[in-house]
Length: 302
Picture 1 (cartoon, rainbow, N blue to C red):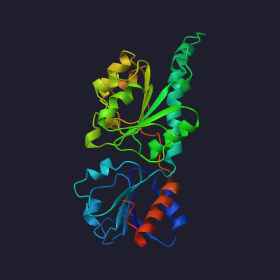
Picture 2 (picture 1 turned 135 degrees about the vertical axis):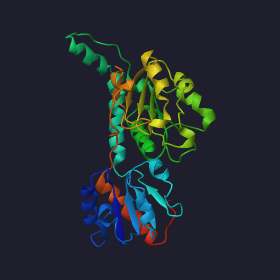
Picture 3 (picture 1 turned 45 degrees about the horizontal axis):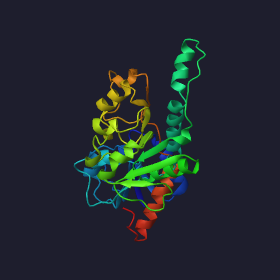
Picture 4 (picture 1 turned 180 degrees about the vertical axis):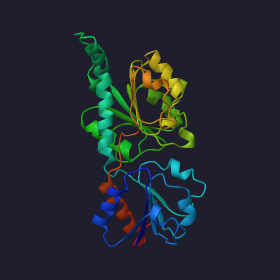
């Protein structure tokens, strides 16, 4: 089996170690080592690869994106459309995403942002808060990560609801589907978690009108794709405190420009797209399981 690894913006050593551990018989090559040769792979494991890779590799049976989102990869004009494209379904990222969401929920709802400000001026000043379990958490996007986060929050006793384009099976919490149900869903979401992918129909889905439909004093946590949110509209809601606070991990343009107002907005926490990093061992085990299915003739996964 010939596997090509092309992750120029990630730590390739961890993926190499995992491949050697779980598939020692495979012929694994790095893109930078074979780019000027005739070596051809059967499977490509990629994360933000050079576009030239797909002009060079002509015998691929499948492409595996080592992340949850394939939007950047699908924009490449030379991505072979006849080759199955897989993305990670969880691969250990769910727990990381859950912890990120919990942090945002607790930080703003328990007023820890204000306590930090009070500490800076040595002010002993308790703040009034509400029990988090009295607030409804809206999960916007019910892919594998959204389902995992929603289920775990539900099991912890929180009020959870989800929204997606289509109904998902076997979820214990209420779901809303389709554009017609979105406004009502938003109006009941005291804490809104954006886990939507970047698609044509999700671009600025959270525009000024829809952000206004959130309850006053709401919290926004965005760790799906940044293009889902109209950043200027969100900034206005943060400045007026209609939105109490925002924990933002993804942005329309990354890295976030140094002059972007989110950096200095006091009720915003900016993180550099680190909410749920890919776990190399879990990712490689999932990829190898999918490759086994392909080799056995089960092509129902893509």
